Image 1 (cartoon, rainbow, N blue to C red):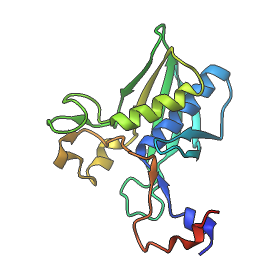
Image 2: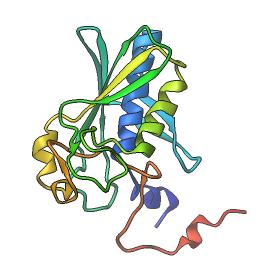
Image 3: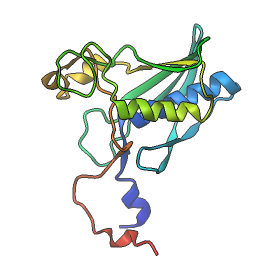
Image 4: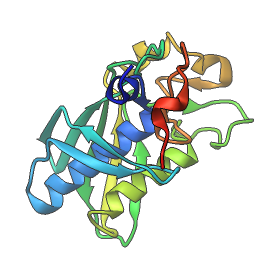
Length: 190
């Protein structure tokens, strides 16, 4: 197996997809440029290049779609669209909200308070860090998942107390391969 073939086995988390969509939408809003891909920071210090499906406007928002890629993992969210819609606000903050298709937390015990959108603290940080590479403040980011309610039926979200959509997660931003782990000898670094 070549190194290139090996790395095709990796995917990106919903959090990384949301961060990439948020950065692309922010670039389009602030700079008036429609990127075909963006590079985002991850919590583990790696940078990921993520391709953008489309950029479009709805009212005062610029939106971008990214496909969540599972790599070789059996993931019911593989190829799901993760969308970020961004608008300017008159506040010196970056607001991140959950929109249509993002679940809500309905039970205690998760790292997200009850009643809040199911966007993990690490995913929020990833989204904010990606947006800050474009602008320091003054934007609102709404994360959406078209068909998220339907996609959630194939996940364990309801079992853990998340209803109405999927979770935006990812502790590393990277979805690691889980099947047929090859020897890491092909990745020997000097």
